[in-house]
Every structure is written in C-alpha cells, then in structure tokens.
Length: 121
Length: 113
Image 1 (cartoon, each protein chain N blue to C red):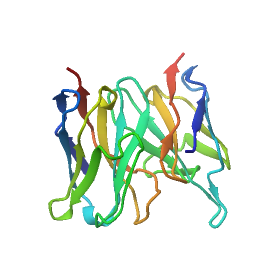
Image 2 (tube, rainbow over the protein chains, first blue to last red):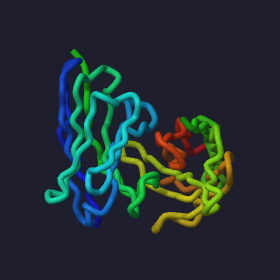
Image 3 (tube, each protein chain N blue to C red):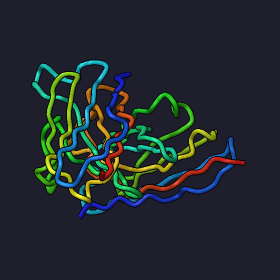
Image 4 (cartoon, helix red, strand yellow):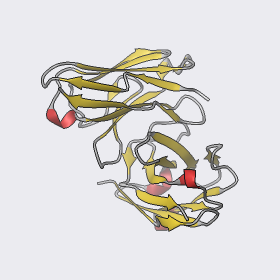
C-alpha cells in the first residue's frame, strides 16, 4: 500500500524558515517524480514544486521560486521542502504527491494527509 | 499559465440524481501527437487530501465507482456523477498537466439537496 506521511509543519514568524519532510513507503520511491501541492485555509489547490527521480530536474511555481527548495533522498525514501523567507500567504496545508510513470507533466495518483504551515507573528 | 475555470462554484443535488461539474481551460490541453487530453479530476472530502478520480479526461482511476464519468476534449470538460450518493459530498477539482505550471480549477462544492 502506498503511504506518504508529511511532517515538519508548524507556526513560524514571517521571514522565518521551515523544512518539511515526506516519508514514502509501499512503492519504488526512486522511480517516480515527486511533488508538493499546497492548500491555503478554505481555498483551492496550488502546485508548489516537483522533482525528478534522480533530483537532476526541479520545477517551481513562480510564487515560491528563489525561496523554496525541493530535494529528495532516495536511499531514505524521503522528499523535502526547505522553505525560507516565509510570508503570511505561504500559510497552507502542504501535501506531497506522486505521479505515475517516469515523465514530467503527469497527474498525481497518491497524496499524503498533509502538514499545516502557519506563518504569523 | 493555463487558467482552469470550473462551473458552478457550488451545486446541490438530490440523492440518486445526476450531478454535473464543468471545467474550461484557457487553451487546449489536447496533445495532437498522442490525441490525449491532459486533464484530471480530483475529489476532496471534508478534512481529507485530494483523491484522483479521472485522468486523461475520461479514464477512471482503479477503484473509482463507475458512476463517475469524465468527458470532453480540447478546452471543455465535464465530470458527471450519474447517481449521487451521500459519500459523494465533496469539493471537486479539475487540473491540467499539459504545461507548466500545473494548474487547478477553483473547485466545485457538491452538496445534497
């Protein structure tokens, strides 16, 4: 059974940093693109960032480019999101998700339960 | 960016009746080389993460009941629930994966009348 478990969320002040983790199990983690998607309270879904199987290719939404860094450790079946210079508008539940196959630009077939990040003074 | 616009924003349907959600993209998401529409539908029940229902505009994900039907091509798409069940109360999102950035519709909230 595919499982994605996010952690690392919490309350942080504007301008602060936070590192999210996603622990994956039940599938061959190193063979899939991985993605972070966020959802502000009461709002819709927003793609944040995606990373290729070997980490050699990364894509970011304009809203986080230069502030967030996506990374992965295949040996640990783990995905990360380093978030710096956080703003109030980054407040959201952050989900990690997988895409089937080996290509960029595919739908998301499995999602974690999410971790809440609150940016507030 | 490809803008995805759903209609209506909310919908109330009686149990056993048909529910229809529409999704329109600002440009075609049909790839001519493989004749596939790069469009997915997700269901998000209250307090839950999104769940994939439909991909390639009309292919049902494994385990999804056959009352969920995806249709459309190019820029206009529809998710139909043929006979509404109580567990279908949720917000439904369409998403294009034709081009970067991935973009989602604003969501359609489905309730029981």
